[in-house]
Picture 1 (cartoon, helix red, strand yellow):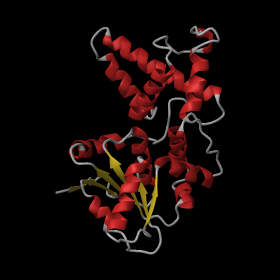
Picture 2 (cartoon, helix red, strand yellow):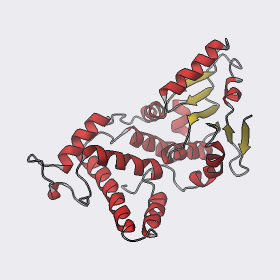
Picture 3 (cartoon, one colour):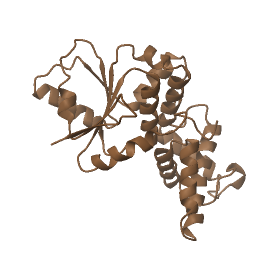
Picture 4 (cartoon, one colour):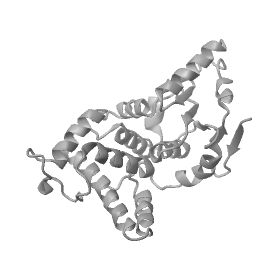
Length: 270
């Protein structure tokens, strides 16, 4: 049987563990789309839509989307670019940063990037993982570096070098392209715009949405956490997170700490 948690300090946040039926119960309560369902994985969106069809439930109340589409809609509402590098483009730029025409490392082309590895796919995975854990937020980056410093020698130095590599690559990618580094950077920008406009950027993009549900997650990235935090701080929408059984109890306990950052969407680069 599923569980529901409410944190008294986050009164508009509800956490569910194995309770997707609670989401489907809202089907048909209105003829307009008032529930925004964020499913980062397309397969999970399709599964929910299939459940609605199989149970012969109307889906008028729901708008199914993913975080990247939310970012673009919010940024369009404030008149900002939504152009971002995809993974293939990013790897191409990474190769030019990490290697010169002879295939040798080019230090002059890699300012503040330690020579840990020059494999573009490995570097991209590292950049993405550090981004997922920290969202490059100053508080989380300080915490990550502090954790690395506490590790045993020589693991501490190796870990710090990997963190420096991820940060250096992110910075270099930003310098090399006029486009956003990734969809995640677009989501950070959208998070900041919601905050700096006191929620009006969100209201302009989603004037009829009353409830936002993050579904199908076995973990919550720092980027997703910052979006939820700014929605709780700056809008009147109710926020629901539907965890899977197994990891749900652990994640539900961690959510308050994950959301506890100042200035959601802030980054060390700006």
